[in-house]
Length: 281
Image (tube, rainbow, N blue to C red; front, side):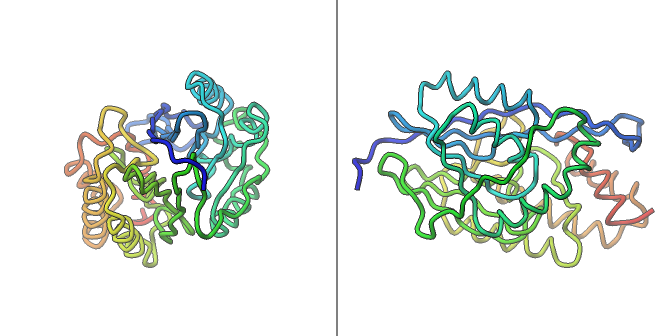
């Protein structure tokens, strides 16, 4: 086994991107994508990037951030198949030759589905999304090493989409949670009908059993810490949503009730379009 060095991590939170769409928020504002977290885990020499972003501008910013670190980008890991967490992978591989790309087999399947649905992304963000071939190879079942430290992919099933994972780095107590956890941002529940909320709650149990000391959410308020308590807050949001979805007579009623409970959460867009889809008009 290679000599083990001390690892650390950094998080770059990218601002949301405005959608081009006739659909609007209740006040007439356009939809904006949620703030996006990219995590760089590194030792003395090598680094691992979790969840590349999805636009040319974001990829440029992340690439510059990696270069400033002075580390060699050895690996990219994708936690789940939503395009905003991996569409920029090909551009980063061009910039950092030799980097390995990993994801779970289930995530890779969903990534291929996302490529087939790329037209919708292009419609929302015209001219901003790079070429999106799926470069990921299945992550080894027993994990892999970063400067002698074990890094593990943990499958958590359905969260805000199917076949999701988190990345666990036991030596530093870190879980990079992708969209299994949110931190001060409204959660995307569009894919949560037909038992999806219940499956997400089970996923949180799986993550909590890892006893992490830090949890990085895929969408977070950059001013908030990576406190494991976000798992409980993500859970409470789901429980509140489940309760209000049963009692709300309209999307507006549900939307207003959730805003009353979470007035400081960022990006109300997913809350509104989730309300329209799950409550109906």
